[in-house]
Length: 239
Image 1 (cartoon, rainbow, N blue to C red):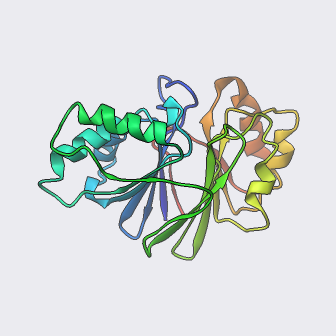
Image 2 (image 1 turned 180 degrees about the vertical axis):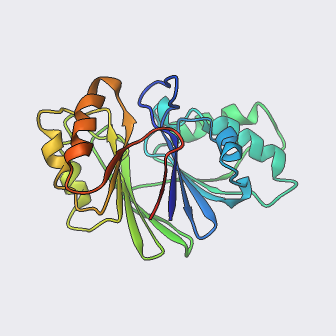
């Protein structure tokens, strides 16, 4: 597996960080977790063919997790007649799904529907390469974390959590992960660093970074009981 951080910022883009988006490459396929960054352009930037994208998974429909999706969909409308590019899209709510479809359809009318899915908690995708399980969290009333399994490995993507990360350890359960990608925006340094240290993982990436909380997270990375990195756009982790 290979993870590419396409966007590492929190609610707004920064000079060197787009909003949250992650590319997970497994056995030649690409799976996108959130689309706050301009994913269409970034796929080209990282030399990832669009037709390798098999699934796009939106953790919740705040703009910093979905803003890059309409342009990607509009591009797919253009290219679908020329190459085999037709991923599955997974949305936690119908309002967000309909907004993206309507927005993208203004650009090209030849195709106004995709393989769109509204999901609930549980296994939402299994293409024989990866299995994706959605786990509801407390950031909003329709927000989710994801567990992705493939090639005998297991990755946890926290998505955005409730302030203070009260649900974090319960979401992880008793599983052992090869990689945990945890958000760093809704973070109370007084208590959360202790929780993060209990993460059952071989390594961690802190993503969705809030600049105000970054110093405490940098300190945690330096003292964590497992390898831990602060995400920057372009960070690549192979495992």
